[in-house]
Length: 270
Ligand code: AMP
Image (tube, rainbow, N blue to C red; front, side, top):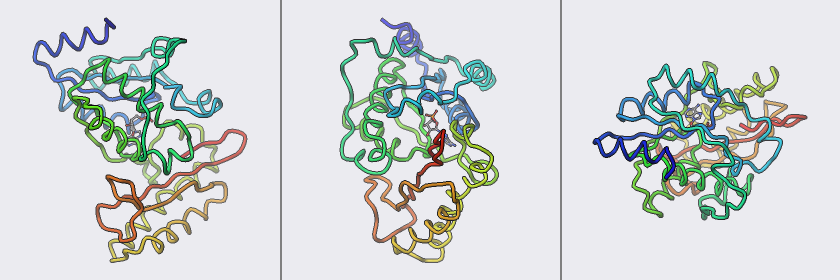
């Protein structure tokens, strides 16, 4: 039996509540918000750090993905994390690894459309992490909103006995969502990256003034995104939070999904 499972089963046998925060490392305040919430709710807090090769569909993206394990371990210790689970790729995926969890229709649009296979990789590793760390609950950020929806659906569909806790997006002072990939942004790109938040704010403002038409809201968002000359928008839409179906009539529960990239020698996706 993997050591990780033995540790958790021991804790559970003593009546401890186990919380998992899955990450790919290069920890920042966004991750720390999830970890603090886990610390509040669990007796045993596990943070997993694993740059999951199966969810990358570009080799250069995988190679350039930032890592900082020593720093991550310090931060976890500061937050009172009990266990950092940082398996290596060979343990997670031996050469004859041959079984994947396949994401369904929810993965056909947005991030899933632009990155074929990405969500199969995500669900496969999340499923494995759930089996290895057997948590009562696991915490995910709304920054990856489609991922969160897919994980919730997988948990229901495959009967994982894990409660999914969602946490809001943590942002820099200028509104850019914290992300491990932000480190890769050149100065000019970093400046322009606020276009995403400007677009979101514009939509929020118009919705609060009573605007409900999806097309009107999307073109308002696009105006802001276009101001960033180096940024290419991949998608921007307003969707139902559960089904991710685009909405003709927008309401307060609706979510705006937006992503794109700074292209160039080293592309950065936001
Ligand atoms: P990652 O290491 O980027 O795969 O992210 C690990 C977890 O942290 C995921 O559930 C993300 O949604 C979440 N996360 C990443 N950045 C943020 C952020 N800025 N605010 C809230 N959650 C975040």
